[in-house]
Structure formats: C-alpha cells, structure tokens
Length: 273
Image 1 (tube, rainbow, N blue to C red):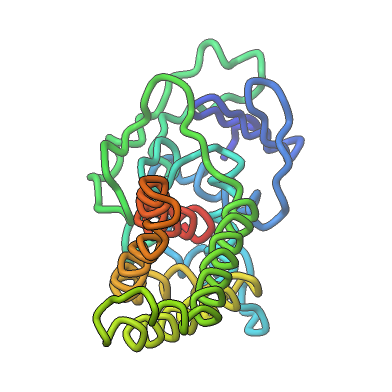
Image 2 (tube, rainbow, N blue to C red):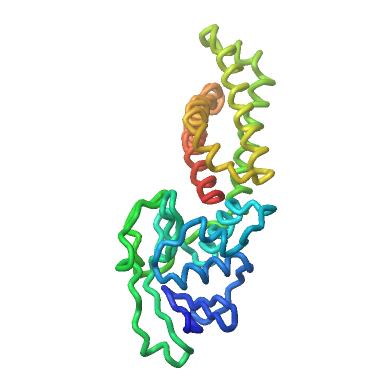
C-alpha cells in the first residue's frame, strides 16, 4: 500500500514508524502480531487465509509451529485492540478459512491527509461468514470497546478454583468416616468417595494443562465439560452435610459451588480464545 497510516475503529497503524496507536497513544505489540495486523489491514476487509499468513510471516521455515504461532499472534492482537472474540468489532475469525478486519478502514498518505480520506467499508468487501463463538453482529459498533481479560489473569484465577476443588476433595476424603455417622443412606460414603476420585482426577488434569499453558487446554476443557459439570454439580450439594451444624449458611456455599463450573468455562474461554 502507498498509505503510511491506516486508521480503523479508534486505532492508527503507522507503517512508517512501525507503530500501533490508540487515540494517539502507542501500544506495545510484538513483531509477529504487528506483521499479521499489517497484513490484515493491507487487505482492507478481505479474507486472509491461514496458509497465506504462514507464508507471509514464516515462509518455508519448517522449524516453527506456525499454526500455534498464528493463534498466539491473533490472541495478542485482540488483547491490544481490546476486541472480544465472541462479539468482534475489529477482527473476525472465519471458521476454517482465516481472518479479516471488519472495522471500517481509512488509508491516508500522512497524518495531515486523514481528514480528506474516505473510509473503506470492510463489510462491503466480503459477505459475512460465521465466526468462532460469534454471538452478535460482527460489524463495528459504536460505544466503548469491549473489555478483554488478560489470559494470564484468567489462567491464574482458573488455577485458584482448581486448588479450591482439590482442597474440598481432600477434606471429604479425610472425613469419610464421619460421613458414615450422619445417618445417610449406606451408599452415600461410597458414592462420595467415587465421585471425589473422579473429580480429583479431572481437576488435577486441568491444573496440569493450564499450569503448563498447554495450547490445547481450551479445546480439551470443552470436550470434558459435560463430565466436569455433572461431577461439580453433584459436589455442590456437599455443604449440606454440615446443615445440622451451620444451618441455612450452607445454602450459600451450595449456590457458590453450583456456579463454579460456568465460571471455569468463562475463564478458559478468556485464556484460550
């Protein structure tokens, strides 16, 4: 492109200075994400395939995990642009194809020409395609940008929840004999033990995957989420064992534990968009 500055949404991509700015303030973006963002901006709303991105960024370098590199670069771009992958206003994922910018793009030769430039409507360049997790209109929206959670913070909160579950299982295992004395059905202690072993195994697996930041953690969590939901909802009733001692306060813990499976899903989606 002949233009030195590309404007979209509330951002400026200064090709001459190799800089991304938001409302005039420079934003930190690494080389690979910056190169990918420049490629998408140059195409002005047209679809850019993953194969084309691989060739542009890495060429024939077979020693790089290029597919994971694209995923990482896209995640960093969205973080810099504060773009929600579930309701994108700037960067759209076209399932199985690639990516494109959906925000209106203005190309200017210099900062002084910005007033006279005409925007290029990305939505008129290519028909809308389904996107991963798309839950609303993909066109650029007015109003403040959607907040995007830092993936590191999401992973840290997720690990805190896993530690809480493992602690809960440990306490239950240590008090199995006391559960037998609560005059519950004879199968309750054995059922508690089996459910606890299954839950502990799943949460240990998730803890290891997220702690080591395994790239496929998001996909694996979605695959086993039905099992996680079933086990965790069963364990949400465990505070009722203490109803005779704590009374109605146990209902608060039941409600919190019943909510946690969905909280985990939200954190995983934030950490592994």
